[in-house]
Length: 382
Image (cartoon, rainbow, N blue to C red):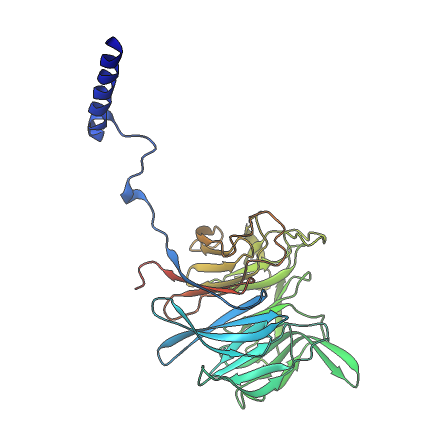
């Protein structure tokens, strides 16, 4: 009978200690005070899946108090773009689909400008202009030469990169071309072109144009007169492929993404950091002062709003950095948009492609190459 008594004694002792307060038995070092848990600054509120498997860029606009995302698709069987109304709760509502293989997308007033992204002279599609005064029924109203990427600044100037124009069966390559939309948004007026090798992408912030010129680095121009840009300086780390970028709010720092810092496409890795941080306060002599690198994936596009940098990071998904200390960014949020593709695998061109953080609501749109559109919102924005 000694054995049952021993078991009973152990159970009684166990119950005693289970019912003791933390003050009685001490605090477990692994326990975390709920008040010390830092809340996520953003949350994923919706995702929508579209046909095909080649989603491309995303952009956005507001109209009559409503917010919309525009999402491109270049899948072979679904060459089109979508306009999606995003409700206050972040819920997506597809309101129109238009048969044009939109690779890059920008807006000016109530006009949508789209290009198919080809930049090897093989494109059969001109860039198209759509009147989207009624987002449920985009109406084609004009054309312009197609290109790889486009940008439209706040003053109504359209910038094309990697444009190939055939005249009398002779291919002419312009590194950058600039068009004026002010006189007639449906009929862009060519006002300047460069005969440099093709640029990859353009950002125009204020009166400065940032020409992300691939392996040649980045060139900075004064475009206070867009018909006569003036070269101010250049930034080149010596390696890499300068792909895209944006400046800090004060214009003193430039963040440049390097798409081929890490590549799994069976081509030579060009090297360098994913994101190079440059001090351009002296624009004639930029200095690299920091970097961001993630071994799990390659980087694509980056935009900055206030003190936050929003990055579409291919197979690593969305990453958001606090750049209050511009030379020392802090990762504050990340979300893997393609969870079927593990990190450090053959990511190719997969995962988060586009990011749009310029909404009035604070919502952030992210397009995934698997033809998915995600909406994120700041926590507490209800």
